[in-house]
Image 1 (cartoon, helix red, strand yellow):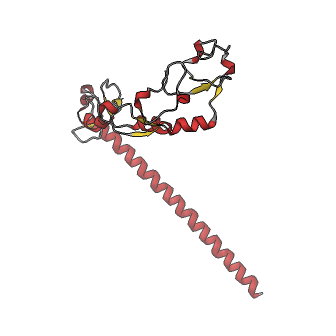
Image 2 (cartoon, rainbow, N blue to C red):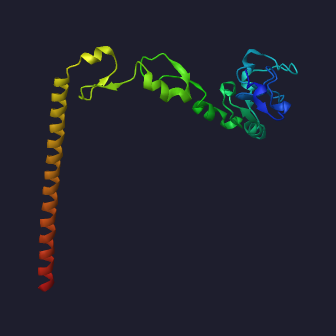
Image 3 (spheres, rainbow, N blue to C red):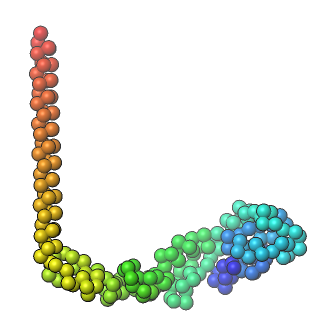
Length: 203
């Protein structure tokens, strides 16, 4: 099926309508007789529905460039207009808008949550979502996802975090000492080279 013609503003050239569904062409294909169809409408036909000429799928080609450009420029309302979206943009850019439209339906981003809502309500849902991640109230930093997670061992986690922190600090210090040693070695080398150069200049 094509793009619902009722969503378009202004005049739509008949040549941009699918000869089968009579809506505005979607992923258009053109027969040798120059009649155009939506890619999803034409495969079931062995003849052109307009002039009955024999038609094979291999005969179908992309729409002429000037027609594709004209199609792309048509002004269309967002599919979420009934939910409150007032956006009107070109057919060529409507997909991008609808993927980001704040009135579009989406699923919660938290794993395991089945709730769906309009994109604009995401932040308010995340605040109350039963599947949201919360930090342990005892301050160990553990992410709480369910009631079972409340039974975790804070002391063991704190110990593990402290060990990890100590190991990171130790490795950073080691890397700094090694870097300082290399820089010191390079400085000595440069001083020696400078001294040799000056001696050669004098002799």
